[in-house]
Amino acid sequence: MVFCGVTYVLWLGAQDVMAQRMTAGQHRPVPDLRSAVATSVASLTEMWGELQRAAGAMERLAELLAGSPESLAGCTDGVARAREG
Image (cartoon, rainbow, N blue to C red; front, side):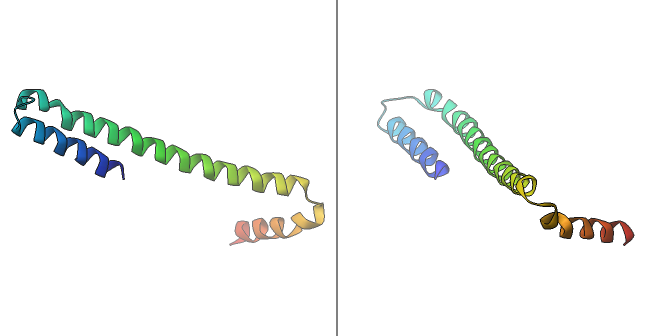
């Protein structure tokens, strides 16, 4: 979606150059800005995914801490088997 928007802006700039409302030299920074914006949005998207993963892990930890010792019995069996194997 972001890349479509950036491509549209690039296309609009090319139209302005062809209509002589802007020079090619004025249009030159547009690809650089495009890559900066796309990189920033990609980083934000990745960060959002990491935050969601952390929230899921915190929820699972809260469930384990709120649970009774009997509900944790299966967890320690798996750890013991992993250490043996």
